[in-house]
Image (cartoon, rainbow, N blue to C red; front, side, top):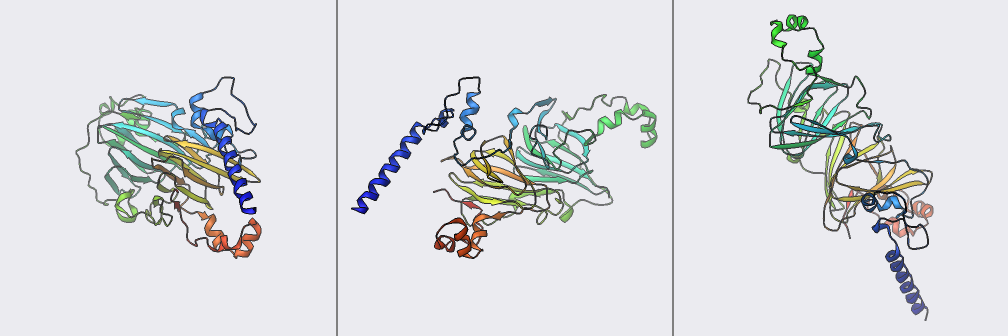
Length: 406
């Protein structure tokens, strides 16, 4: 009889949960939980945004306290268009919680040039469409010219001279900078801008040519300009930047990291395998449908993210009982505060979730919740969580990283 009563109770509980889920209206863009909380939105709203962000409507009952906005959509950025391409940024004024990192999407047509320039901060780039030619010179007169395609990365230390040219009909890449306030004066220095602001007599003396050579220098620097693809080779007495000095990392020419959880692909690119990249560490992640980037935190830096494809969700715990859940889709950026606990879940049943993680650090580092518990005396962990000791004893002692969806 007791077994029958338990079965009846479980059935009743399951039925009630199904009814609540059916009556909840989060998927319809309304803050209604099906249990008596909430009500329809009657004032002005962007219904499409509400549909894409059910977590903002209160869907996750575990969210609590006050957590600032940690998400920015590149679609909300101002796009600057030029002859030959465009750029749209996310800086600290857009996402105030991103103290360490600013970013941009940049597009070049075939032959178009992001003019010669340098920055007061380091620049990191990831090609996700087309092919580009990167060219750079360091303070020792060493140089690098290389072709990058999907998945390839460059890193230019602060102050290094460089330029980028599109090689395919349409080319696009993610740019990352290790300073959230990237747009402030004194961060970027463009060649045309500098030359136009220098007296021609000085230019002539510096280069040993007539002043007339500089008659066509643009008054306003073009930033991106149309041109034809380069056919010239570069040589120099000090040689090329190669080996540990190389500014380029061809990601998919290297093996991915082990993923014991079996839920996807995980590439780590930091100073341990890309030695020049001392201030920006990164990962390229592909998470299978229904999969989970396991619960963890990062001990060395904020985590900045760019979501390239798919749909996902993450809950961020910032301490003192404060947590908030965010929904993500392609083109979104996010920042998780330094040492905050979180996961990332692929909410699609059919599509991979692909994203890039960025840290203002020389290496990628994370601490796994499950591994921490597994390597703590089981009776202590069980006593704190009020869970069975055998649950803790069965936890895997290695990081799972990406866990397969059930």
